[in-house]
Image (cartoon, rainbow, N blue to C red; front, side, top):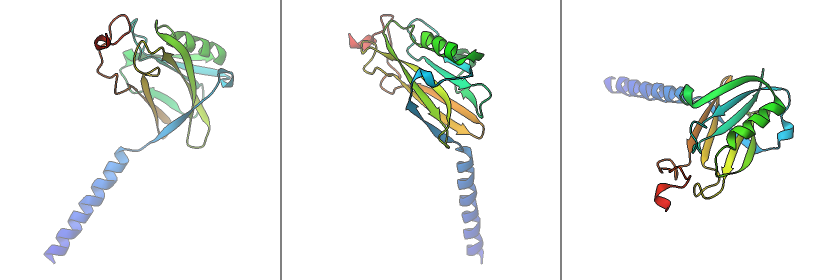
Length: 177
């Protein structure tokens, strides 16, 4: 009898901890697809991430249709990004393109649409691609969109190869000379 009670308590603890672990990891990662600028219409909120210093390669712009079903949050300190609300789509795209193209090794803009679980476009990502002089990759960012209820949390990281690489003012990695 004592052994059965012990087994039931252990099983209960395992089920409880499994449920708690699952609830803490709630949310689903969203996918992105290539797109063109002409798709963006209406009024947008423009999120500008990075661009904090002249050699900042960790720069990204996100356009979210105002009044959309999801609010977007950047997983970063508030001083790393700013949000400009109520910008017409065409102007928002131009401002985003200008924002991500400031770096001296800028090559071109890459634009992707952010898609929810139902296949609806809920936002647009505009990121810079760089000439290989800056790094071994033209696209140095890993960006993840995680939906939790009516919120999309944006995680922005440098590629693992670049995460701890010191950059000089010339844009080249210090140990690549």
